[in-house]
Length: 449
Image 1: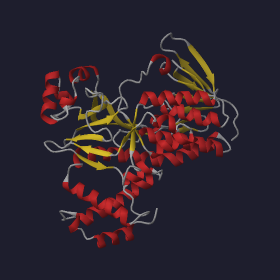
Image 2 (image 1 turned 45 degrees about the vertical axis):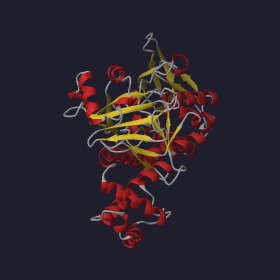
Image 3 (image 1 turned 135 degrees about the vertical axis):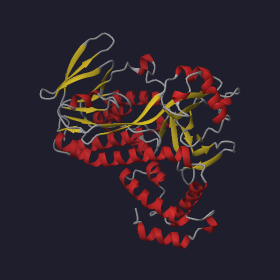
Image 4 (image 1 turned 120 degrees about the vertical axis):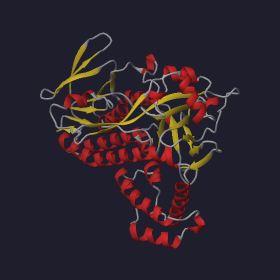
């Protein structure tokens, strides 16, 4: 399609700002409405949140938007998982072969600001303090309200694009008009954030170029580095039970829990009491929809269509891929109905795949990273990847270091996982594995990528 008429985006978070940049660069008039104040004037009000892990899919989108250099100046490299077993020495498990295969820790607020600046530079108009209150889809009028002064405004739209997160106002407005098939599946676990400050000399207190994990079987802590030489620490714990957040009603209970299960982490948290008191328990859930669009009038993407738990670090990366795909389909189609249909057909299977992999990765991170069978399978995985380039690629590598569709990575990962299980069954070390037999399984079950 050639640009004609205004495209209206609900939400100026990460996905909304990137999508605005991409569409405005193609010549579309773009109006963006965000319920929060402008973070550049008021300071970032997104609240404390799990650090973002930027991987190849997200980097690919930033490159296409011309933002890679700006963002990478604010990023900290993470080579792998630094596993802190209970009572043992930390050990680094690399994500990839070398420093060409890493992920990056980025600050949500600063990234959002960089994307907002880029969207406005491309020609998009961004309106803050504007929450989507309702939509007249027949008249193509969106109604917004300012929750600070209660003023209202109406916006005519050619198409309405929903980038307004898991609590999407556009999704709620669409629900009476299309069978979305919405399901919201709480994980039953929550999270609470703490902070490791810089050391006395201003440096990092622990290894900076790693994602730190304290796995405890059923629950865990992680820590991601920041450019300020701090770490954002996140405790993931069941909401109920023992241990669980409901079993920690007082500061004394929380400290005793950390002294027992995270004794090596607690000295790194001098403001433990303040952080525990001030930072609420966050919700973890998976949002699934059977339909993302209302013919050619509205479409959902990012968390508004497929919110996921954060354990593969792919929520932002997946949303950025959505933006690239929607921009591409709008450019290629004859009308918005065709564009939105093609977008949903491409992206929904991939979103469902990464949602499933994110749930699986929680179990791996909290239960398996210090397990002997898992470590042996990881060794064999690396070995087979070297013996069969272009055929056997670890699932984590497919997800994080390539733009291979998530659905492809998910299905090939199942096959590869079975090969690893069969080849290592009853074996205690890599020396005991029959590599010739493992090679045969790879050749038999996997086609070249």
